[in-house]
Length: 168
Image (cartoon, rainbow, N blue to C red):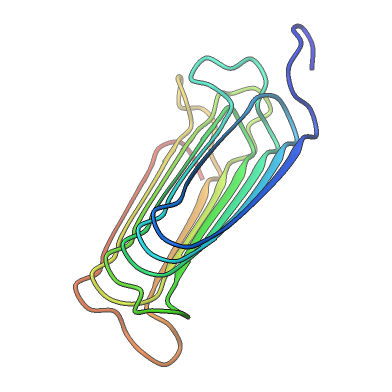
């Protein structure tokens, strides 16, 4: 991606099974994808696409799926028109005390808005989503979705917070 050399259309896929696993992915540039899956307890995910002062980092996708308890997932996306999704399930063990954090910051360049989706099953989970249309806050059309509980059971002691700046 011009004017400088950076990543373009890179793909990473990480799968981990067990306890205490950790993965970190950093992608610069446009149209990159990261898919991560962890099964077990006490696992950590950190995905960062773009940088605070990135010149290009748009149309990126990050999907994280964790199955278990005491897991933590964080996705940060910078520049514009990115999509992030964190799912924390409880197929193997009770999905309790999971934490999900998504941060998406855009600049006015071609800003069409970000999409953030967070889903947590079980109790005592925390979900935070922040979408910022940059400075000046002329961008917009961000969309954030938060789901806690599943089709058969509700969620107790769950916390969800969404903060959006910009238009539309």
